[in-house]
Length: 563
Image (cartoon, rainbow, N blue to C red; front, top):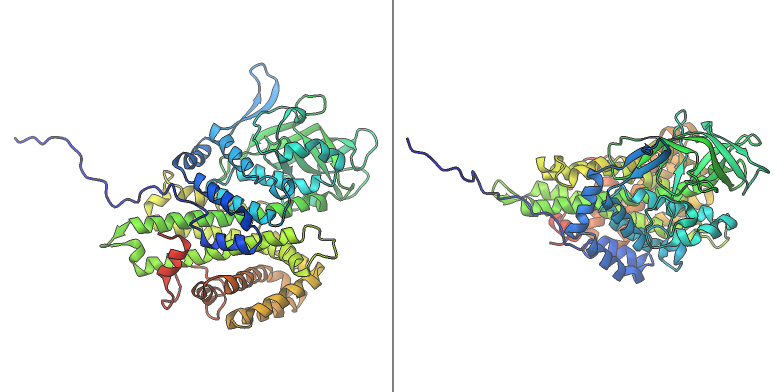
């Protein structure tokens, strides 16, 4: 009987090589164009350097490692002492170091100049394409700065540590740290987004009020992120019906660990590199910031900044998934042709590219509005800029974060079965996508906030719609959509509330349409409006890959990610 030697059963062919060593910034025409027009062209070389560094194989490996090795909580030392220590993989700290070196945590405040907010948001967008969990503590630190700046004595102690460009991973008191991270604790078991139902109480140690010391008793159901050096939290005092805001450090003034006990870490669907916890306050030390009873408006200012970062984070996920999908389609063949040359696949990829570019143009424009309306009380603040910040931001947070869910699923499908397994990045992108829709206010909360903003800022809303009308007159679909939006807003109040999601959606699509009409090639703008705003498209373009065949799909793909 003839025996056969054991050898390879097949050669590995028709598999896309890993995508690495490409420049995240240089290949992104939409981002590059927006950087210039939104006032941060001076940051171009820094972004080019950063874009190259983020795609090296070693840097890409950090994202995988940090998500495969989730943080661990150690509540007690071997001797039985309560320590509430969190242990992270070294890759996590490398990711935080990358962010701090680029100033993602403080740039517009530490180095103020025209365009600084736009520059920082562009850098944040690049990092969001690498890894999402490590963005959480840096975005909260960033968002806490304008709140803390209003507390001069406290801010003087924190300024240098907040602005520092190095990451200090040590779990030691604030006075010993070279840099610090600030977290947030708002929600409780019984309320979630309804923070006014919070039951945590604060008791003054001496005289109460702003700047006074308190002890806190209660809990937080989501405490992000428990390893931070301090948190801004909401609690009730006996003197006020409303909630107050408190600065709660990880260590008490006597140098001992503050009485904020971490009960457990959340076992989350995604965002696994980052820690989210449940905590109990057992006479925890805190200092009141802001006016007593005005805690929600105080901390909402922080939330407004983090909502913008949710938009950017979701846009970054979409961009990362898009370039992975295009790369795969260029290297994978089926039925005798590369996927990218097959008409239906080209339609899908081109449609994804439109969504990505529209979201990029949107967040960069909103970032410019944040900078232009930094002092909302100033008579020099343009009503249009105020509207972009106050109305378009929550609408964008609702719509773009929702679109990321569908987007990452569609991009995963381009990869087929390879996209569904954890050995590639697509599964991580998909698991990561839902968090930004939930964090800092879920969809309904955002849409109701849009209506509230329009009602409270009617002058700003009217100025915004007037500006859009001027931009839309040469695009019938855009003009018609704007007319429908205004008619809905002028309708009965109860109908407006039940239509809040549709209103927020239309605000974003009109905003994106005006931006693309002014700044993108005609082919891009026309294809976007034909599938998102024109009659018969459902005013959403919910299923990707439904572009009319009349558009040059290949050209749209090439613009999105040049070969």
